[in-house]
Amino acid sequence: MTRLSDIIEKFIKDLLSDNKESELTIQRNELANYFSCAPSQINYVLTTRFTTDRGYYIESRRGGGGYIIIKRIEHSAGKTLLDLITEKVGDNITYDRAVQIIEGLYESGIITGREADIMKIAINDRTLNIYENRNNLRADILKAMSMVICHK
Image (cartoon, rainbow, N blue to C red; front, side, top):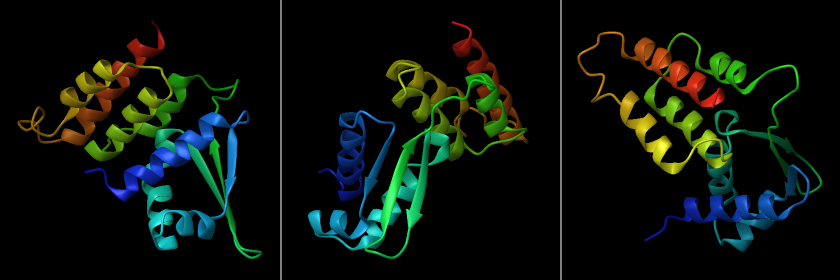
Protein backbone atom coordinates (compact mmCIF):
# COMPACT_ATOMS: atom_id res chain seq x y z
CA MET A 1 0.00 0.00 0.00
CA THR A 2 1.40 3.37 -1.00
CA ARG A 3 1.78 5.95 1.75
CA LEU A 4 0.13 9.33 1.43
CA SER A 5 3.55 11.03 1.51
CA ASP A 6 4.64 9.01 -1.53
CA ILE A 7 1.43 9.90 -3.39
CA ILE A 8 1.83 13.62 -2.63
CA GLU A 9 5.49 13.52 -3.70
CA LYS A 10 4.63 11.83 -6.99
CA PHE A 11 1.79 14.30 -7.62
CA ILE A 12 4.10 17.29 -7.10
CA LYS A 13 6.85 15.76 -9.26
CA ASP A 14 4.32 15.09 -12.02
CA LEU A 15 3.18 18.72 -11.85
CA LEU A 16 6.81 19.84 -12.06
CA SER A 17 7.54 17.64 -15.06
CA ASP A 18 4.35 18.79 -16.84
CA ASN A 19 5.32 22.40 -16.22
CA LYS A 20 7.49 23.87 -18.99
CA GLU A 21 9.38 26.06 -16.52
CA SER A 22 11.78 24.86 -13.82
CA GLU A 23 9.49 26.00 -11.00
CA LEU A 24 6.01 25.32 -9.72
CA THR A 25 3.77 27.50 -7.54
CA ILE A 26 1.23 25.71 -5.36
CA GLN A 27 -0.97 26.62 -2.42
CA ARG A 28 -0.40 24.44 0.63
CA ASN A 29 -4.06 24.59 1.76
CA GLU A 30 -5.41 23.72 -1.68
CA LEU A 31 -3.07 20.76 -1.92
CA ALA A 32 -4.05 19.64 1.60
CA ASN A 33 -7.75 19.88 0.65
CA TYR A 34 -7.10 17.92 -2.56
CA PHE A 35 -5.52 15.08 -0.57
CA SER A 36 -7.85 15.45 2.44
CA CYS A 37 -4.95 15.87 4.81
CA ALA A 38 -3.54 18.46 7.18
CA PRO A 39 -1.30 21.20 5.73
CA SER A 40 1.44 19.84 8.02
CA GLN A 41 1.46 16.66 5.88
CA ILE A 42 2.25 18.81 2.84
CA ASN A 43 5.01 20.55 4.83
CA TYR A 44 6.44 17.16 5.80
CA VAL A 45 6.61 16.03 2.16
CA LEU A 46 8.20 19.30 1.07
CA THR A 47 10.84 19.32 3.82
CA THR A 48 11.80 15.66 3.46
CA ARG A 49 11.35 14.93 -0.25
CA PHE A 50 12.19 18.25 -1.92
CA THR A 51 15.53 19.10 -0.33
CA THR A 52 18.57 20.78 -1.86
CA ASP A 53 20.35 17.42 -1.64
CA ARG A 54 17.72 16.08 -4.01
CA GLY A 55 18.00 19.08 -6.32
CA TYR A 56 15.13 21.28 -5.17
CA TYR A 57 14.74 24.70 -3.61
CA ILE A 58 11.56 25.66 -1.74
CA GLU A 59 10.28 29.20 -1.16
CA SER A 60 7.35 29.63 1.18
CA ARG A 61 5.18 32.76 1.25
CA ARG A 62 2.76 33.51 4.05
CA GLY A 63 -0.36 35.62 3.77
CA GLY A 64 -2.91 35.85 0.99
CA GLY A 65 -3.63 32.13 1.30
CA GLY A 66 0.06 31.33 1.38
CA TYR A 67 1.82 29.62 -1.45
CA ILE A 68 4.93 27.60 -2.08
CA ILE A 69 7.33 27.83 -4.98
CA ILE A 70 9.24 24.64 -5.76
CA LYS A 71 12.26 25.13 -7.99
CA ARG A 72 14.36 22.46 -9.59
CA ILE A 73 17.97 23.50 -9.05
CA GLU A 74 19.82 23.87 -12.31
CA HIS A 75 23.58 23.58 -12.23
CA SER A 76 25.17 26.99 -12.46
CA ALA A 77 27.65 27.70 -15.20
CA GLY A 78 30.34 28.60 -12.65
CA LYS A 79 30.15 25.32 -10.77
CA THR A 80 30.30 21.84 -12.16
CA LEU A 81 28.15 19.04 -10.84
CA LEU A 82 31.22 17.53 -9.21
CA ASP A 83 31.93 20.82 -7.40
CA LEU A 84 28.37 20.92 -6.10
CA ILE A 85 28.47 17.32 -4.87
CA THR A 86 31.90 17.75 -3.28
CA GLU A 87 30.71 20.90 -1.51
CA LYS A 88 27.53 19.19 -0.28
CA VAL A 89 29.34 16.04 0.92
CA GLY A 90 32.18 17.80 2.72
CA ASP A 91 34.55 15.75 4.87
CA ASN A 92 31.91 13.48 6.36
CA ILE A 93 28.31 12.59 5.62
CA THR A 94 25.62 10.42 7.16
CA TYR A 95 24.07 7.57 5.24
CA ASP A 96 20.69 9.32 5.02
CA ARG A 97 22.16 12.52 3.55
CA ALA A 98 24.29 10.50 1.12
CA VAL A 99 21.20 8.61 -0.05
CA GLN A 100 19.42 11.92 -0.67
CA ILE A 101 22.27 13.01 -2.94
CA ILE A 102 22.25 9.67 -4.76
CA GLU A 103 18.47 9.84 -5.24
CA GLY A 104 18.85 13.38 -6.57
CA LEU A 105 21.36 12.12 -9.13
CA TYR A 106 18.96 9.34 -10.11
CA GLU A 107 15.92 11.64 -10.36
CA SER A 108 17.96 14.02 -12.53
CA GLY A 109 18.78 11.17 -14.91
CA ILE A 110 22.51 11.43 -14.23
CA ILE A 111 22.71 7.85 -12.95
CA THR A 112 20.58 4.77 -13.53
CA GLY A 113 18.56 2.98 -10.87
CA ARG A 114 21.12 0.19 -10.85
CA GLU A 115 23.99 2.63 -10.35
CA ALA A 116 22.05 4.26 -7.49
CA ASP A 117 21.55 0.88 -5.82
CA ILE A 118 25.25 0.02 -6.16
CA MET A 119 26.24 3.37 -4.69
CA LYS A 120 23.87 2.92 -1.74
CA ILE A 121 25.26 -0.53 -0.98
CA ALA A 122 28.84 0.72 -1.15
CA ILE A 123 28.22 3.40 1.48
CA ASN A 124 25.76 1.76 3.85
CA ASP A 125 26.57 1.27 7.53
CA ARG A 126 26.66 -2.50 7.24
CA THR A 127 29.29 -2.37 4.49
CA LEU A 128 31.36 0.14 6.47
CA ASN A 129 30.75 -1.39 9.91
CA ILE A 130 34.39 -2.22 10.68
CA TYR A 131 35.52 1.38 10.25
CA GLU A 132 35.53 3.75 13.18
CA ASN A 133 35.05 6.92 11.13
CA ARG A 134 32.31 5.66 8.82
CA ASN A 135 31.00 9.10 7.89
CA ASN A 136 34.47 10.24 6.79
CA LEU A 137 35.01 7.11 4.72
CA ARG A 138 31.48 7.38 3.31
CA ALA A 139 32.22 10.96 2.19
CA ASP A 140 35.46 9.88 0.49
CA ILE A 141 33.72 6.99 -1.30
CA LEU A 142 30.78 9.14 -2.42
CA LYS A 143 33.09 11.86 -3.77
CA ALA A 144 35.19 9.27 -5.62
CA MET A 145 32.10 7.67 -7.18
CA SER A 146 30.82 11.12 -8.13
CA MET A 147 34.10 11.91 -9.83
CA VAL A 148 33.76 8.82 -12.01
CA ILE A 149 30.12 9.62 -12.80
CA CYS A 150 30.85 13.21 -13.73
CA HIS A 151 33.66 12.22 -16.08
CA LYS A 152 31.77 9.54 -18.04
